[in-house]
Image (cartoon, rainbow over all chains, first blue to last red; front, side):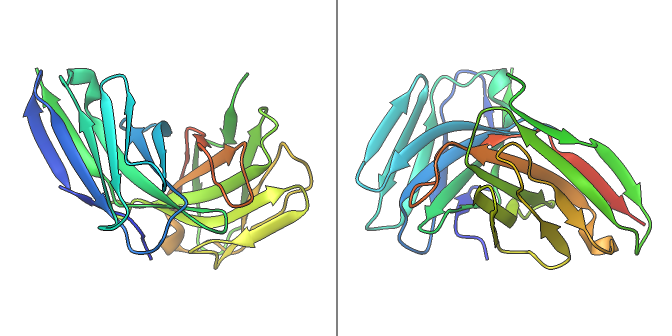
Length: 110
Length: 115
């Protein structure tokens, strides 16, 4: 069964706006990762946050992790049309299994 | 570096046929895995390997076999294809293993249709 569940399932915003996606999970984790998938392509790693970290930044990306609520959020600031893609969270369960959620489809309109 | 290479990119099979999806990586990663992606369901782990000679089952292993004879290659075999195996298959590798699955590097996917 899937560990992470992303919310919302789909998001449509204007270029320049911020996009926030949320991920909830069920069990204890070692780390949580976010990936992007452009249509018809493989997934690309965006950011990894460990269970002892609360916030991490990478360029226009900001990820938070709240282990007490078993949730994470991905914020993309100043969105661009090129950010249009599906975004997945993935949780690293102890035991070498990276489990993915169903994803959020982001559309950035120019 | 080519990264993770999957072949074929597209394949059509008839029910009952067998085939092998190939996956090769040139990054000397110990960890390799296979996922399938179906609409609305994200990626589901089929099998994974933490090193040559070691494989284990993921979430949806039935109907699939894997082997890991070298660090570079991790083929996925469909023993007797069924329409339910119509999907996009992704191979991914990582430098990490043990208690920490690091960043996964993905191939471009193999689209399989079973008629």
